[in-house]
Every structure is written in C-alpha cells, then in structure tokens.
Length: 395
Image (cartoon, rainbow, N blue to C red; front, side, top):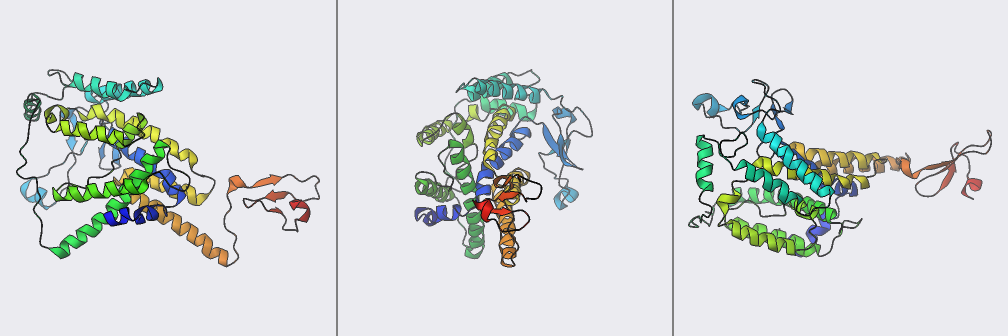
C-alpha cells in the first residue's frame, strides 16, 4: 500500500477514474454523511428501519421502539438477538421523540450560522445541544435513570480518565494464507475508499483541477498509507482519511496545519475521554446533515446531457449511502461508465456513430423551406441534417 503511494502509482491509478465518477464522489460522500446524520446511531433518528421498505420515517421515543433483529441460529436457539435497528410502525409515536426535535434545533442553528458566515456555527450548534442534553430529569437527557444512563453518567463524572495500555499491541496470526486473503481484501477496499475520500475532500477545498490533480498528492497518499501500516500494529481499523473531514473544509480548512491541530486535540482526548464520549449522537447529526448538503454542489459540474456521465455519476452518488460503502459506489460508477463507453466504442467500429453531447450540438435554422438545417456538433464540424454535403454549411 505504501509502495504504491510513494512511487506515485496509486495516484496514477486514481487518475484513471472517469471524470463523472470523480465529480460525483463528493456528492456521494455528502449523501453518505447525511444518511448517517438522519439515523439514530450517529444522528437525529429521523430515518429508522422498516420490514417492508427497509427505511421509513421514525423519530419515536424509546418506549415505542420495536427492535428489528436478524433471526439467525443464535437468536432462535438461545434468544440472543442483539440489534440497534428498530421500527416505529408497531407502537406509533412517529416524530414525537424529544431528542430528534432538539437535534433538528441544533441543525437549524448551524445552518443559520453558516448563512451569516459564522466560523463557529458548528461549535454553537453541537455545543448547545450537548449541554442541554447533559441535564438529568429532562426529556432530552443523555443520562436517563436507566442502567445504560447511569453507566454513562458515572463515566461522565470522572471528567479525566487514563486507560491502561497493557494490551496496546495486537496478537499476530501465523495463518499466512488466511492473512494473505484478508490483506488483499483490505488493500483494494482501503485503496478505493480512501482515494475516493481524498478526491472528494480536495475537490471541496477547490485545489483539484479538471484532470484530477491536486498539489502534493504523493505526500498525501503516502501519509495515508503509513498511517494504515502503523495502525495495524496496534490492532486498529485502518487509520485513514475520513469523510468527516468535510466539516473542517466547510469551516475553512486549507492546509495540513488543520490536521496537526486536530492531532493535538486527539491527544488531549485521551485524558478527557469521559467528556467527549458524552456528546450525544443527536447533537452531531445536524452537523452531518449540513456538511452533506453543502457537498452536493459538486454535481453542478456533472454533464447531465451525456447519458454515460449522468448514469455513472448518479450510481456513484446513490450507491455510497445505500450500501454504507464508498468503495461500492466507486465500483458502480466506474463499472457502468466502462460498460457504456466500451459499448459505444465497439459499435463505432461497425460505423454506428457514438452518442453526442446534446448540450454541445447547436442548430442553425434554415433560411428557406427548401434548405435543410445546418447542425454544428461537439467537434465543431458542420453538416446538413438531411445528410447532404456541407461545404456551404462549413463556411
């Protein structure tokens, strides 16, 4: 992974990603973030599970939630059916959850603050909702008088906590064959996932050109690869460029100094984990929605008049949130583009003209009823629409 990045081969491969897929990637990441922000685990809980339609409108209070579980062998035999998914269809209460409404309040605070170009809009929105949610005996508390709520509150009261590092190194396996398959799988998943993220974030920063290039790309990809390597030594999931970086970009981040400062705060978070772990998901959901909506602007560059561009861009954007994977979105977009453009090329060998870009075709009206229209195509060549010679048309 690091060798591909350091030699520039990784970025060379990334540049082979078709233009419409590159353009649609930021929007797909934005849709992914918004999808997370609308759910309960990391958001305001407006979208919940549904047996018939997969997702539906939710936001019902805790006592009206019906768990949706996977009825597998363990669930059947032992009654162990863990699940965070739930539906509101059985007991009702749709859009009556207090935490959802205070999350919507935080969302609107952030949106209005950004409209006034307030740099601290995210801090105000998340901070206000968080502080309100820390008070007990309220409908929106993050610390209800339940076993889970009491556990959270007891941890919150510590304020400062240092966890032991006696298990910091991961146990390594001797199963080389099994590890090889896992490494290959992680390589292509991480390659596409982080490449798509970097392209999306740099596009939002406005530093990427039409060819997909951005300054010091080799260094960026190399740091990403080295982080993944060192993280694996400690048994961590891939340390990589993450889509929530879009929040920093929208706040004005342009340089690596942002990452250095964030790294410093992450170091402090080791000691203040009880405080940071007590930020409720409905306080963060609004921020994810705002970021997702702002990242949609990349679609303005997509050429919807060319079907292969419109289809591949659309699939890239939609598959990412619906499959919870940036990788699958890129595969869908690249695959559809290659199939369509490959078919056009193959048919052109049989003298079947490739589809033209409707936006790049202009028609000059005829001067008399007996004279055919003159058509100018995207290659700036003129011809008459009845197929006749266009010497006069070209002039």
